Length: 201
Image (tube, rainbow, N blue to C red; front, side, top):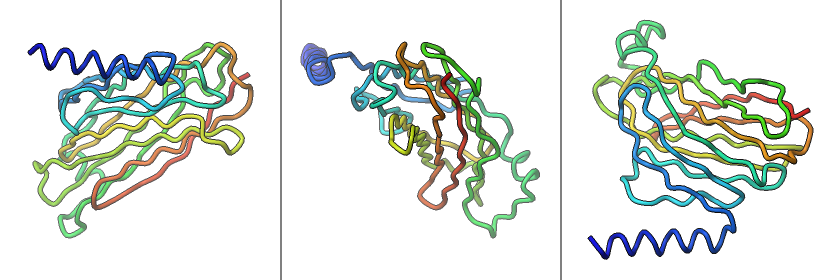
């Protein structure tokens, strides 16, 4: 037990040393409705402590978003496997599918220091609905063509429709302009991409 605690403390010390602004660890996401993962990340890449490879969140903020923070990743299961299959008129012969239904950045116009909720709703469909699939959610945030943030999470999903949200708190000196968020949802067999935007006034 002591060795484990010491290891964690050493990792935390290392993160603090290389970042100059602490980063908190991602935690494992279960498949429970309304689950959330803490991930306050500054200018450097996110560091993962403990947990399995499923349900972790990583990422960072650079450039125009330095000094901002990525809050609690949260998700909700919107439709069951059967409901999702009916919505898409899905047949098992189609194989594994992921399909983004909606992507949003709310509010679409914000000021420095405000928080933007970056949300995505997507469907996961498999020939065997009960089989769990590893899903990677990547949100690439760019400003004037330059990457300024890339929160990423890896979760395990059974068939169904899900909404996941990552709150982004802007730094107090945010660079004004339009920010583009390219969200990629991918599994080992499929991928879908959707782009949304928000503006800093």
